[in-house]
Length: 250
Ligand code: PXP
Image (cartoon, rainbow, N blue to C red; front, side, top):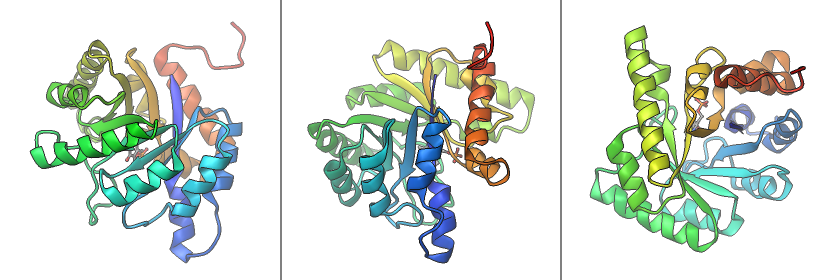
């Protein structure tokens, strides 16, 4: 299972002072040295954290792969086409939100039209497309019809579940949606709100091949450093997956 680390919040700290530190490009180097499989950043239309300069430099310097999250809007899609990261994850975006709240609403014809256009324009540039969706069979089927290569399931409902019953229901939804995605030829990813404490049940879903995790890792990195924070998340994922921690004896 791949771990892609979302480093937006390194840029959030920088933008709090509109200065040049901490630099997400430097953070990406540490994340990669710690063994992450990819770097994820969200170029928001309001440029609240990650800037165009960051994405350009990351595309040049990443030794792993760059997963660029953007809205299905021409301006940011143009930037993505020019930079040509390995993967673009199309996400819904609302200016007033604190963070991405929910998956793309593929029941809305207007959204489907914008996502179809963005998907086509990005795939023309040779970019792999992942669609950030809620774990519902309808959204998975709609994503397959849009010819995306992958879907990323929004795990926010799981992360915010208050009772064991709610949590188990959300895990079951994720499991069923992931199975359907693979059946329809889509790669299955997941992310949002995952933490050291809650990642295991999601990592245990065998069809999921990639997790995108940001806030929890960057928060821990403030205290223990980036390398340890990434490695500890990897260990938590491996434990959920039933894989022995890397580097330990068989
Ligand atoms: N995946 C997507 C599509 C996101 O938009 C985000 C948040 O930017 C994440 C994953 C990571 O979420 P978190 O920061 O809660 O780990």
